[in-house]
Length: 318
Image 1 (cartoon, rainbow, N blue to C red):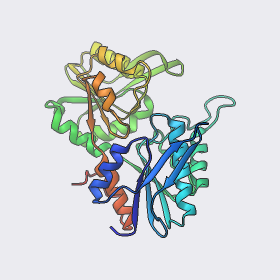
Image 2: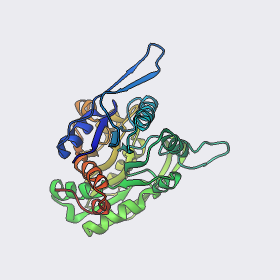
Image 3: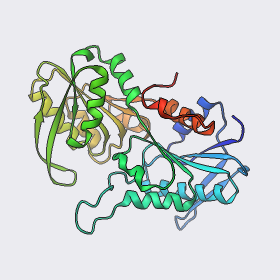
Image 4: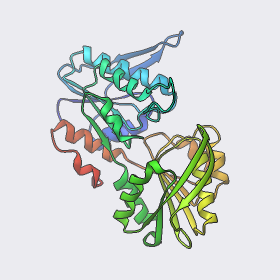
């Protein structure tokens, strides 16, 4: 693949390396550092003139630093005459602030979209946006890739009783995602309706559907403090489920999340590696990781060669 450069931000270098290895490329030379006043400094170490540049930076860790670093890298490549700059953001930062749900609330996801466009990004590649309409915040092409094919493969390979399971959404917002997975597996689905008192605090839960004497598979796009997820698991167990699995695209696991998972009734909590999980796995034996680097790598290859990306919405690249 000539005329292409892949650079890695500092947020998830392991994933960047896997993507580069999959494409048979070397990661571009870039040095990111901070001055003593905490300003971010980026030095691109090789020519990008006329190149198709891809910058891999996930919205995790120190999110604001990662975002600022990405914006500076995009800008640096753009003014160094790169022909096209694509931001590969496996986990999109501020995706949960996607609507004005109370007076004077910001729509921060829209602000991030504006910042990326202003910095000079020509194209965005991301995965399982919290709300797919975030694509509409951009005036540039956005490829919102789907973890569903690798999730389906994991379920079929690792849950022996998957033909007799119920796929469950822990909230109404994930109903579309869950029904799609249930249709592909040809199994039933259920829904948990939750009422919140305030952000990150759930008041009560109501299960809609039947999980009695079945394996329950909770599916969601992300889990942060895992309060909802663990309450949902308890609800399913009390409703007669034999085992409970959780499958998430983005495992943020902040605050008390790991201790909650350890004390919850999960057989396994399965996440993709859009966010680094090595440290979390040391503290929690229930966490399993699915590699999605091949999906991102194939999206980059197809975008670079001007091919359709829609194949990736229903297939795992070989």
